[in-house]
Image (tube, rainbow over all chains, first blue to last red; front, side, top):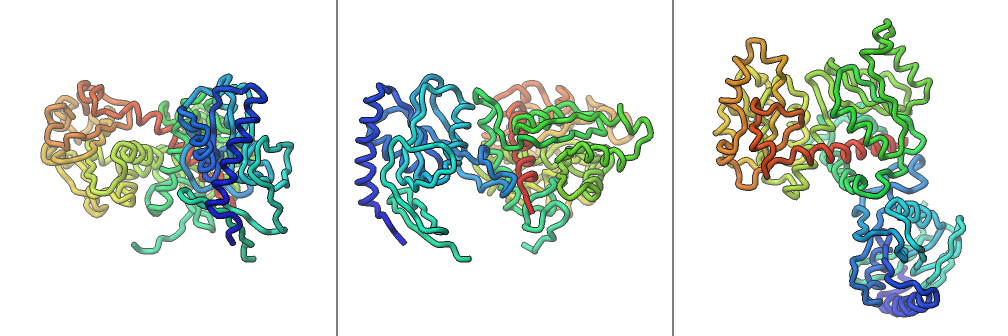
Length: 171
Length: 321
């Protein structure tokens, strides 16, 4: 079931870009580096990157090698490799994902970023905040909050027209 | 394509469990190895050249036969995955004191090793070990006799794919001592499965086994004919210890007939790439001008070998039941 269509998501993204700009100004964070988490986070990051008018190339993270469930479920299907086309040292990194759920993906992404260098700061930007974190993370900028029923899943589809769909997997 | 038997290499879900030979594995599995290696290729260029994937795992390199290049790249691959590595030079250790292979394996199992990387002079040794180990332990073949050297074949396939974008329509020639080469055998199976259009082997009659044509390759005894229009040439090392016998007159004679020179490469495709598993014998199978020239990808192969071995280790270790 579609819960947010492309137009609604674009509206949220415009507001997120404004919120992010304010957040960064209040903290005097300039010369930011945007990093999206594959796959949905990269789509959101691309749009914010455009809305904020940043020239420098976008960073992309594939956190498959940093997941905490490797011994339970093994390798995840390969997506594009990680690529941070800038020096992370002393940069203000803006980490972008589509959905903040347990926080485990953020944990993995932070570990990976620190293997590239030592950033000056990392802030977290997400489209959807489910509010069910199992780790001590909170989003600095969240597009919207959404609470789901038990067993319900939410997924961003793209990359051209974004939409947010929910599903209850068949037992 | 006919349905393939799962065999000892795959688990019940059809995922790679042991990596012993490129034979009998599907295109899907081989492609998954290449795609995973692509993700590992950048790790060596980062500030921290490690990912935490195999943190807490212990990998034992069991080398019953000497090797520097293969052993060090396996070791580096394991370390870049954050595994702990034991290098056991079997020749200088327990077997010298009379310990049987089975006892050696059981000793290592008691140390809670999770994976054995095996190099052995006997064909089938890695299969044999995979059939003996406890269920949770993974085995990777790092070369067994004349049988197989699957990670070398995959790193060559990886190098070719990175340059050519894929395998369709390619002609690949393997030149040299095909008879004694486990690399050639693993490459032939891998290239055929991955969809290389034409695999050629080029060598004197004495160095090509009679069953080669049955593997679906074109056999050439003349280098010039064999190299015509090829997109990639893989030169095999001529093993000096084997040049004493009746199979070959001399190293000079071999170079005269089969040594790769710039002149001889002229009949190949204009953007032909030259591979060699190393170590190279300059002036025996390959001229320095070619080995150091723009078409040579020999040094790239070494770093790709680390990525391929990281991919195979993590796929095998990640195949949970």
